Amino acid sequence: METVGFALFAAVTLTSAAGVVLLRDRWHSALMLGVSLLSVAAHYVMLAAEFLAVIQVLVYVGGVLVLISFAVMLTQAGERRPGEPTDDAEVAAR
Image (cartoon, rainbow, N blue to C red):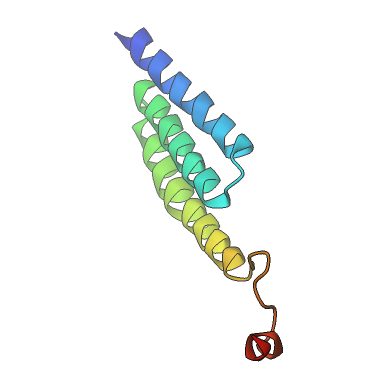
């Protein structure tokens, strides 16, 4: 049963890690990073290293992923769509 659980979490870890690199949308990539980090914490639990699993969740998932999420939200706020006016003069001209 341990082997099946390990194989399941290994597949989730590898798939989500590939999703971090291959997805074009930054928000979905950050979510895949969260899934990958959580599955690594599950690996720690399977190895009876509960302290490392808790630290993994608190520091990486709780801290780093929140920081990345804020960065993604702040960088997407400045993006404009093609054909969208760039300044107030163009908005007034329309």
